[in-house]
Image 1 (tube, rainbow, N blue to C red):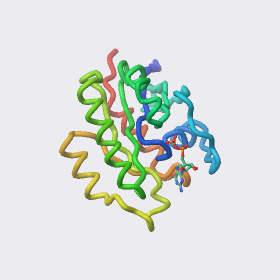
Image 2: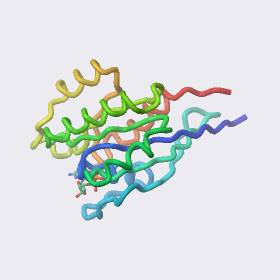
Image 3: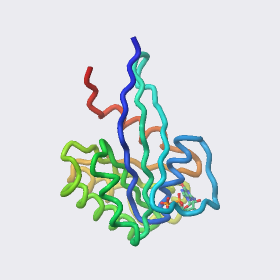
Image 4: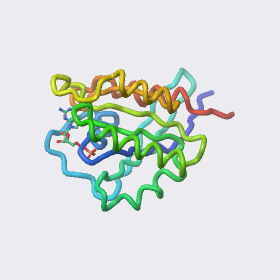
Length: 172
Ligand code: GDP
């Protein structure tokens, strides 16, 4: 007997950290240097195989990071099962922004939401401003999953979603 579970996942983070690129890599295994910014929010789905009998279907809401769309975010995270909060490892300010999203989720989202903090653009590690230690320490303190990835090379991208899939509560 095969079972499929469906979960809602929201991406949050400052504009240009690579949210849409991570989704494009995960869903279509593509990367585009010249993508246009997301307006409002975009919706895509992707399934992952958890084991022989279990698939997880993610409904992915990719939100726009611009300040002018910020008021829309609660609509997307309110009934989300999981959130990926993205920062750019080459921009310290983007980690600050990620922290503020995480505080907002901790206050306003469903208490059972699974939150992953994800540092993107590891292919640009020569320009790194956020150390792994700093981000990991913060994630541990806040009880969040933490990972790094590169939407450009694909490194770590499947792992983010797979790690979340493994944490989701599956009921019969
Ligand atoms: P969003 O606004 O957070 O959705 O960010 P986008 O996905 O639109 O990406 C913003 C810019 O960063 C685009 O020019 C992307 O091509 C670039 N980008 C995204 N991910 C990566 C990555 O992993 N490595 C590099 N080098 N560039 C990336």
